[in-house]
Length: 298
Image (cartoon, rainbow, N blue to C red; front, side):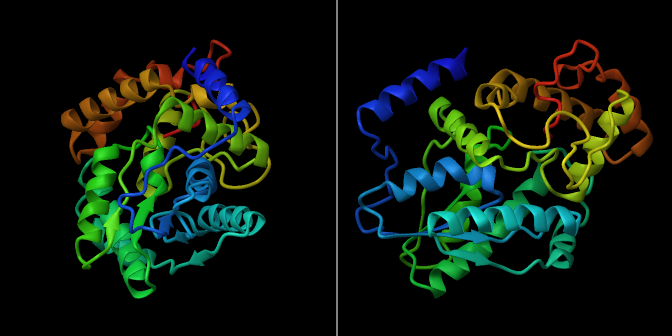
């Protein structure tokens, strides 16, 4: 229902003449470096920023050494790059220093999503974005991680603020990018561009956890690349159906149960697998009712 209502509001907005609703952090900001995790999360944010009369330059910055395996990394990067090329937007391809990423995540291998590991991951990526912005004269940084309801917006924003604070004059652009309209618009663009539908967040630990869930529920493992997904559709195609996978109810239930599992099992692999069995019938893993919405996310 929320997606349908958002669709109607977007329709009226287009009929009235589309204008950006985003608000740069200050009047002095005219050049923005947008850290991008993937093309699907970039679409609506790029559209809003490029439609802002205040901004002279928006550059997409791709630095995501967390994405594993390399094949998945290349798929996400190349799709993002093509999207920017089609729009005539500068795309910065940064290093894939995965060894550095694993070094920073050491000791947090079994942290739950939105835990300390995710904070460290956001910090690492935003620090690199801030450094590039400082060295190349950008006024502000932002990140598409803030658009996903699967991410804790405050956790993402805090990393952005810390990174920007390292350099005098650099600002972090904080805004509510998770509104119903922004979320649906993200899926409209993804369907129009037929973007690759990712089946997990990106890191090897997310891949491991997602496949553990699937195994416990008799669901096929995640497939990297190819035209067939492990579960559901490989490409975005229907905005309303795709948006239902990011319903706030589904997201809240997922993290409530994931945190309970983490609290019970900690780093004990055996206890973790036992806990997974307890929660195997959660909404995210319904597999016998013919409904697959929400099944191929993390």
